[in-house]
Image 1 (cartoon, protein in one colour):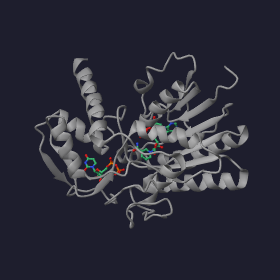
Image 2 (image 1 turned 60 degrees about the vertical axis):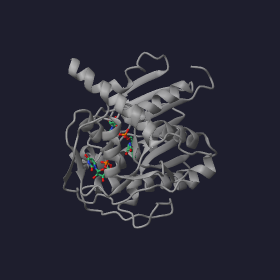
Image 3 (image 1 turned 135 degrees about the vertical axis):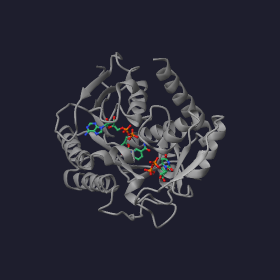
Length: 320
Ligand code: NAD
Ligand code: UDP
């Protein structure tokens, strides 16, 4: 290893965001240790990186401790889609809470800088709009989304307590809905669901009346912000919103995807899941001022790339 080369641990490295981050860090000439237990991630996402001299895979569950010599940690391990995180809620909580304790303990021991992938879900069903970092949220502590929302909130508390008590060098980013290639095709998130349904000319499943809103960030913009955040001075630790403030109703998203994929799909309206937030839009002036970051990829452009990805995936499957 070259002396100045950073060795970086990416937990959840075989997942959607982790796989893009691993690739980007290798391009930045870092040595990358990609850790995953493959609960929702897949080797398919990182197959192009296997064999790279500075890329290493570690099969491990972060709810158990581990020891490694590293300079930085990106803690991304955690199922992110409602279907996956509700599949085993206790394990989801353990991943957020025990996982954070283990990764923070590791960071403390080896004096590594550590980033936490927190979430807009810490704001729950927000009572103020758009959501600034100063908002404390409106979260149901006992609902079906709570294992994720409260787990991530507790992880933020742990990060700030390790920082105050043990001087661990932290960064906490609150990610808003992000989409792009390498999303899991069956994880039930809205962008992947709608694209797959549209490509197969099947009904587009709108939960509720489709008037709830989300703001969608293309993966490349988000990864750029993560890297900038970790590279910036140690006086800026967050929490910082990470997302694209362009806000759309779910019905608008469905209509766009139908048009863009030349689909014959019709909209179908089904029950809204419990505690589904009615609106979500990040206030991003902190990221703009501190890191000179603004999202560049328009929804249309990001959707083109994502539709192409899923189209190829479906064609490859059909050919098998
Ligand atoms: P993903 O499900 O594709 O990736 C998560 C990865 O973590 C998977 O590879 C999974 O196998 C792994 N994992 C899960 N539990 C683990 C454990 N106990 N030990 C080791 N590995 C484990 O999800 P993603 O969209 O890539 O999300 C990555 C991170 O970003 C998550 O922490 C998620 O909460 C956060 N986030 C994502 C979004 C988004 O829109 N994608 C929004 C907010 C927050
Ligand atoms: N949604 C939908 N149809 C689907 C999947 C999701 O209408 O097939 C809705 C869901 O109810 C929510 C929004 O789309 O209001 C975003 O859902 P997702 O699971 O992607 O993310 P989150 O709710 O965590 O923001």
